[in-house]
Image (cartoon, rainbow, N blue to C red; front, side, top):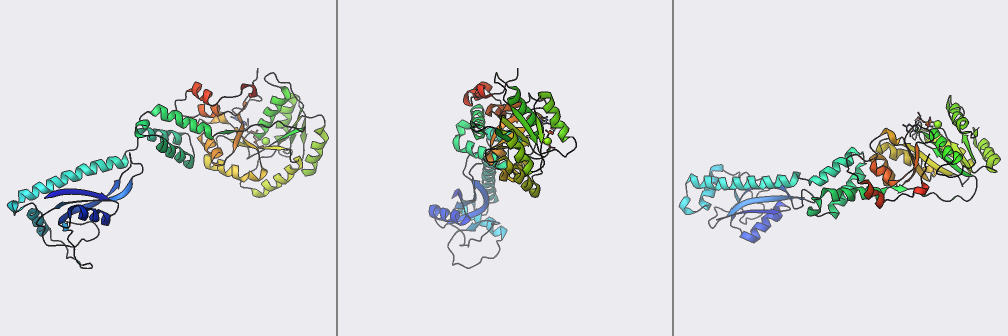
Length: 423
Ligand SMILES: Nc1nc2c(ncn2[C@@H]2O[C@H](COP(=O)(O)OP(=O)(O)OP(=O)(O)O)[C@@H](O)[C@H]2O)c(=O)[nH]1
Ligand SMILES: [Mg+2]
């Protein structure tokens, strides 16, 4: 008599395997569903495991009955379609005794021994199966947790985890720091920083659109300061601000206040004709026209459409930017990015980076939808709280990773001459 434990993807496959290996004179004790193959629970498949024993003196041929058997059954061939009556437990016990050998016939100690061995076997298998099932490599669990903390979108997170599984061997996974550095690198590679084109035709027109309250007006003032006051030793150029937001209480006063402080002119327009006329009027002698718009709910497609029509007055050379707040959750960011799509904006300005420690939402929403980031703002102070976006800036903002700044700066170098510096 010989015990066996066979595994296969299906019960029938398993029985065929047993039949091939041991012939028909076998007795099946039980079967159970298991997870097969894989490493640390990855790539495992559902399967079936059958435990039984071979015997030279199998008792009465039985028919295999589908489902979980309540006792030992024989695999002996039987005409198809014939159904065996329910198994009698005592009779089945006796079968095991018989199968254990003539010398033990009738002795319950033999049965006890058989059952004990089977139980042990079962426990051992259960222990390994459950550890295979639940055990995820600690490196993968750790990265998963960090991606979660940083509010990366589920799709983005899954991509990173799949890539780890694909690119690291079991041995490689044991080196957490190397995996972590690679993950940071992949995240960095997924951030597209907008490359500003050299603008040929003056005036350059920059327009900011976006949801309400994200910081468009404040950002317009910051941009006006960068270019109109000069920075990093750059000479100031002639800048004018135009706001479409003239009727809201306080809105006019807000941009006017910035204009006064910086001694930069502000114009107000209400409609397409006004805007077209104002741009034409100041085209001569103005290098940069910054246009502030009224915040729009991404859900209000009628208002978005009206705004789009009005902005057509800026002409095709106008550069539109979408402002979004870093504090917006990933799924809302995606909706905003999609809803503003008809504006054909060139890039995204991420505001309020100072208000959150999680930037995975921004990184994943931009990456999932293939958008670049041009500026980031990180505070209410005008003009100093604005920077050109850099990959490093996003990576050092991530929670939970041990970021080796020198390493990521070397991997994602920043063109310092491009940066805004206030002295
Ligand atoms: N913490 C922080 N606050 C900011 C930032 N940018 C703007 N704000 C603040 O956000 C609030 C709204 O800013 P606004 O510039 O008026 O926003 P807006 O997009 O023009 O708003 P609407 O015109 O109403 O759509 C103000 O209190 C700003 O000071 C930033 O980068 N960080
Ligand atoms: Mg505003």
